[in-house]
Length: 333
Image 1 (cartoon, rainbow, N blue to C red):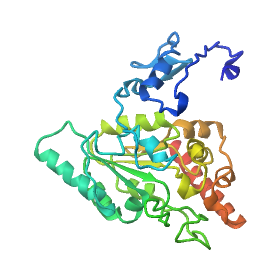
Image 2 (image 1 turned 90 degrees about the vertical axis):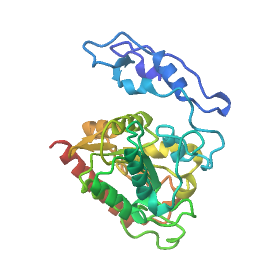
Image 3 (image 1 turned 180 degrees about the horizontal axis):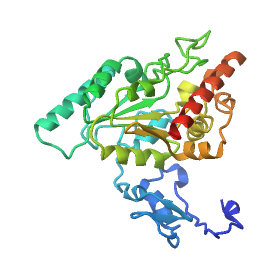
């Protein structure tokens, strides 16, 4: 890091900060403390409510992270689970620290709609209802209830954590599973269809806010939830969640896998508000610099693609190229 800044024109200082020794979790407060240690003189005419870190204006949201730790030790997530990382930007994976309702796979949006109706009847305007379901419970079994809620404009945030399969029950195929992937229900020929474009389905409902995020880019994720909380109506946030056992890669590589998904265009960070598309975070810089990597960089690191043939590889690359071109066109409208 110091070498990267050596000789830079603005002589940006680099501050050492150590956390997480001995395998301990790095708390949100430690991250903000590290950022505070790197403050510089403000740039000329910074935006109100912003501070400057290493010569760049950063959003104020970063410094409003709650110091209270909501994630309890001993969660039931697998080692290296991307979802447990994403939850730090939303809320804990156990109902102990906050009010929560567990429901069946298919009824997440229906259950959340009932909570919204109950809170409205009690005139409780200070509570935000957040519904969280996997890709199987969203793309497949739960699409009916979610579509109905979105059509009505139900006032909640719906979060799909997409690990591209039914991972809770043994890595079965879902309509979110990508072409060429091995699952326990596609063990020989692999999946023969592309992943369902569920984001288009949700956007077709003309909802108030739609966004994608990744736990590998936590500030982008956090900012989108802060923004969604301030909006009324149906808000849909799609999380790309790497899964070590389901995707067959070492647990230590979860953050790297999430970043490769974005850097190859397999996953794209963006938001749609009032019908307007906008790249965010890493995807925005990729679009500006045209630095997207080939999909092979992402696929070859996962055991679930070990039976993928050359034709399927080309199909996936073409699929990503086509979607990326569409996103670039929309970003310029």
